[in-house]
Amino acid sequence: ARPVIAIVGRPNVGKSTIFNRIIGDRLAIVEDKPGVTRDRIYGTGEWNGRSFSVIDTGGIEIDGEDELLRLVRIQAELAIEEADVIVFMVDAKAGITNADEEVTRMLFRSGKPVVVAVNKVDNLQRMDDIYEFYGLGFGDPVAISGAHGTGIGDLLDAAVFKL
Ligand code: GDP
Ligand code: MG
Image (cartoon, rainbow, N blue to C red):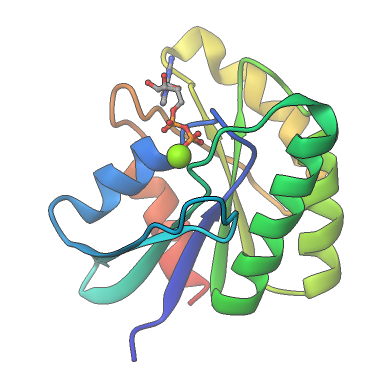
């Protein structure tokens, strides 16, 4: 079976945007169970001659801080269960939030390899925004922009290296 890369992070950081850029048209399975928070979308990707599965976690609507924390916990658990490498996506504009810290604790305990992807770095002026994410403790964050498609090669270099 192919190795698995899972994309986790709180809603709106850009997970699905990046997932779509990575898989192109190689969408594999959509599990759509209404009312169930364990939803996942699977696709396949290829980079530097390596082929892998990609999981996009969480496409549901949530309401309020409690729900948000519950959701990110479930997503992180899923990723930890299924992934060989986890792409932990955060938002350069928002900085580190409580939900990000919750995910960080869970990923740390799991011991799985993690690459931090700092999305929404849409221009070079924003490069300064990535430094605070070194504080998450997963090594060098990778700056990306789902809007422009920049940095995704660097992200895949880092993720595939850890497979
Ligand atoms: P998800 O909830 O984590 O799957 O996030 P989505 O992929 O649905 O994106 C959430 C919102 O952020 C959408 O409005 C996207 O168009 C926007 N978005 C995604 N990537 C970028 C980016 O690189 N820059 C900016 N400015 N917006 C982005
Ligand atoms: Mg999404």
